[in-house]
Length: 276
Length: 363
Image 1 (spheres, chains in turn blue, brown):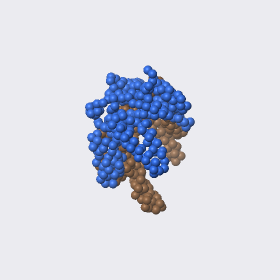
Image 2: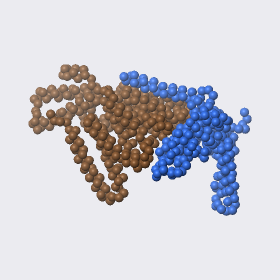
Image 3: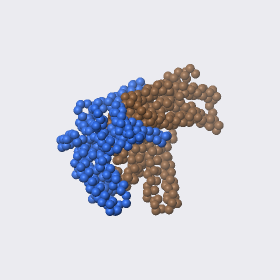
Image 4: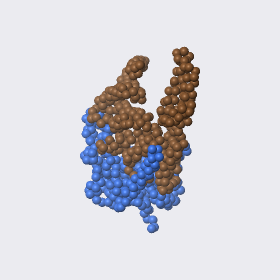
């Protein structure tokens, strides 16, 4: 019995790893479901390694990237929440404030638009706010201009990736949004927030199911090279992207793919304006 | 002598049975000494000597074959070794986790994959080699838990390396691996790890069946009630070769049920029931007493000591948490603790009555 058990355990471990490899291969086999090229504005680079005992973070080459997308989803209302399976009947009694804790998040798919109408709307609104703040600053109605500076910075550094719709069927979403160059469909976890009061309108939020995307070894080397090139004259530590100026960030290009099982990987990293 | 030897060695017994017999022999000779001092029973010297020789031979045979504890000191040391084994397993598992975390960024992806795949494999081989050398397993459980941690890291870091979506199937794989090791080497630590993983998988599946995201598995404690009941019910399955395992199933399963009820008795808004949170909390406050009482009754009826203890412990916890919720704010502290003391007295009377009820009828 013991010998069979031991062999069973070994075979089981091999089987588990075989399944994992198969899953990766199946996802990346054939033509990707989604392929989109984003700039450094839409990407956050990760690569710090925490060292317990030394209370320091060792800076390494970037190991993974994270998609930066807007968390503003004004279109994600009760009707949309119900369309993906949420029960939006917030209780009418004093339990309403506890309802958010009760509602489970749901896995669904979101359409993320790159530099599209949602971004333009946000940019227009931000520019209006800046104008308004500048007037107030000139009139001396506000004491600090730090918020104004932040707003101006956001115009050149904020992400241009905006979620614009959700649905449980990625095929249906793709039919509705056929532009593959600007629109990406990705699996997300959707949550409902009722605002904690009866009569408030429930709102949805999303977070990408797999947000941290690991880079392959050649991609890590390539990205480190690009970053060194960009930071060469800055005299700043060689840390993944932390001190890149917005105009430098904009030159970075990342091609992200989603495969058959909607799991992502980075296909290519390049620098715009680089000699081939 | 020769006759004794052949009789003992012809019938090899499992370790637990041998230990129980050794305990009975020790108790027998303690009682025999007391009886002799009180002149209640004095065996003829030749019979006494023959019995002593037989028992000594039996004990040394058990000690040789199964490494049973034949003295009180040995028993205490064995318990200490088991505790050290568990602590060691936890420390080694943590060390493995931090080792991966610390050096992870320095390795190329093929090296990382090789480390992830080979760690649980090599540790499983080490479990087998250690188990072959040990009669009572102290090092094997430690390595077994390390192999379990190795597989958990394998699944987690592989998923991270290749950007795979988190899946509840990982919990099922962990449970299956822990069960294989537990049933191959008779390891209770691994059985507990396997049952907890399986329970988490069941809870995640119940939630996912209702449309929720599986990683929000802790959001509805009622899922754990159902999973705990399934685990506890599995304890009735016949497991003659593993006499200690049904108890583990019962305790792990019932512990999950009790903890979930305890939680829901205070946080009713997490329930599936479509009622106000106060109503749900009241329901689970009553349910806590009813279930604890039922568990005690079941334990007494089936003579399951572990079930009776668990039922009693949770009955007291339910009672004291209720006292605190009802009276702490408006009763003076001296009166509150007086009521607690009175309750303790009542519980003592109740347990005494229960003890009398469970006493074996004298012949």
